[in-house]
Amino acid sequence: MTATAADARNLLDDVRTSAAWIARALNGSGYRADFTPASLRDVERFMAEHSDHGVAVPGGLLATDLKARLFALGAYLGETVRRSAGGVWETDDEDPHSEVDLTLRLPDDSVIWPVQRVIKRFRHGHEDSIAGYATGLGPGLRPSAPTRRRHGHGAAGRTAAPVQVPVQVPEKTGQESRSPGRRRAPSVKGMTFIDSVTLDVADTAAARRFQTAAFGLDSRIGLRASEAATSGFRGFTLGLTVSRPADVDSLIGTAVEAGAVPLKPAAKSLWGYGGVVQAPDGTIWKVATSSKKDRGPATRRIDEIVLLLGVADVAASKRFYVERGLTVAKSFGRTYVEFAGGESSPVKLALYRRRALAKDLGVPAEGSGSHRLVIGGGTGAFTDPDGFAWEAASPAVMTP
Picture 1: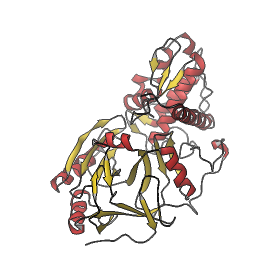
Picture 2 (picture 1 turned 60 degrees about the vertical axis):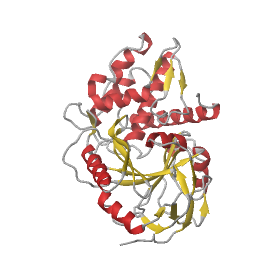
Picture 3 (picture 1 turned 120 degrees about the vertical axis):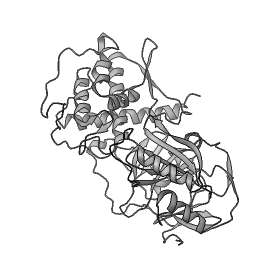
Picture 4 (picture 1 turned 30 degrees about the vertical axis):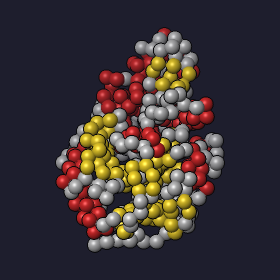
């Protein structure tokens, strides 16, 4: 099914905003980024100086916010091709990975996938050169002369000079300027974060034993006894972000040993490596990493916990939460939104389309009854458009 006109327009806005942001950042850091075919040589240089065959250079500009930055670089590549050769952006609203699968249809009716191409360059290195790829698309995309390097070092084994780039791809909301490169970074003072997440379970002691044995989570996720009726997909997942595939395998393995049911075995995907299990209490957990190679043994360290809510309308839910004080950290049109988290917040909040989330987790999207989930925060008590309940911030109910 083709995306609605509003969805396509929203995603196209994100592409243009992200492309403009990365262009400003690159230009201000000694890389040429003027949307000409010649500028793709400097994008290639940037990739060479900040990544090495699927691994971001430590301390480099791809070491943080990797997904958002690869999306922005893909948007820049696509916009450069579109401006030089023509073409129209297209997307599929039913695709759970539509931000990655964005297509650019060229005037000859051929199709390219710019974001996928940048991800491929990140993984495979110079053999999948971005500049070489663009040159192969036609005469109009062949740079006439090499670009001059304004500063920095060569790619092989050397690190680029320090570059000042904003931490996040700018997000468009009612509280932000349409010129994101000139707006101030949001201050954490006054922001609203998740203070607690509590799961309703039939047996709190058993659920705590599972979380400890499976993931070593101690008490970061609260539990309380409840027999609230629920059936099918509860509309959310708890995601555990780790640093390497070995950690995914280790955590998935102990979860299954502790009684979890595998929903999706650990495997490689476009974004990395991950797997999905369902705990005995019914909660669905996803364990994933953006890395596809192990750079050491498993540590079982969890870098981040993300509460991902499956919602009917991502844009409407985003507006709802922004109005209640949450700040958008990153967004991909009407597909995915992630909110900023605080240092003391145990969990980061994100939104995904319900059907796309169910598909990603490997379960049917249908479900009814209680979500068996309560979120605590400083916004007071309310229920969001999809029935997820928030309560005034208070310590979650902990069990031994």
